[in-house]
Amino acid sequence: MTASEARMQTADEPPDEPREENADAGADPKAPVRARKDEDPDLVLEHAQTPVPSLDELRAAMAWAFEGEEIAAHLLDRFAEHARVVLDGNRRMNLTAIVEPREVAAKHYLDSWRITRLLPLVGRALLDMGTGAGFPGMPVALSEPQARVVLLDSTRKRIDFVNECIAALKVPNASAVAERAEDHLARNKYDIVLVRAVSSVRENVRLLRKVRHSHKDLVMLKGPSWSREARAAEREAERLGFRLDTVWEHKLPGEMGDRAFLVYRAPGGHGN
Ligand code: SAM
Image (cartoon, rainbow, N blue to C red; front, side):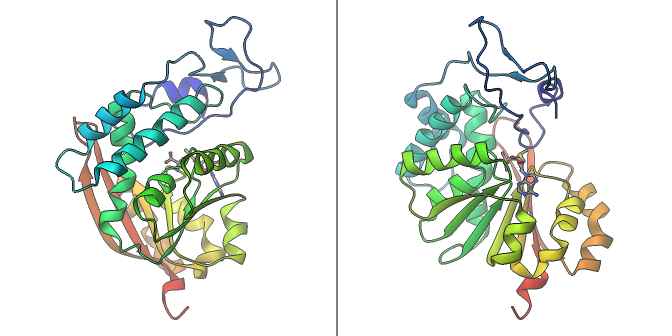
């Protein structure tokens, strides 16, 4: 996605797609940082000049987004701490287009955390495939210390950043891997593969076709168009042995949009 396409995203859309970062910092401190000439001319470092909200602001935003949820106060502190590291990192590489504190709290943290309300995770091995800046993997790892969470992305720079977050927040149950999911899953088995904002349901299922025995559940975090996507994927999913088991629809606060979790039982869940 180009930077201009990224700017066109609406608040209702599922998570934003990070763009490639630009290593050359701009000479004009007020201007967005331009890409090198041989790269996409639309490519800019979107948030080089965006101020990073204070920890107090982010903590207040977490309290707002999680109002009415059963969640320990210390976890909201941890989410705010992580959000600050992400928004700080967003000034030097394009990690997220979502920077307003309440939106960050709802769209990145509440959406990710709610997975832990749906799935029993204690003792489970999880892969967050295409983690980007660390979503949903980091909030899930912070929420469930007894789950082992591997955050995987094919882009080395994003994984270097995720490793910085794991070290800064000291998250012993999380680790990060720079590899393509198809290659990683050919050698590693998981209980659950989580996927948010990587591709359509159909494309995700197709991507995993050769490694479909490597995991038991394939869980996709989706936006409002989930039913259209699920229908479009129906035949392919069935052919490959993925069975749609549970759909959990939920709403983000402040009219920030509808979301859904789709739980597919993968062929790896039967007898593996
Ligand atoms: N999951 C994050 C979120 O919800 O904010 C980031 C989503 S980002 C739009 C998609 C990420 O998937 C990118 O960082 C990209 O590098 C990664 N990705 C795409 N295909 C992949 C693959 N086959 N294996 C591993 N990572 C992949």
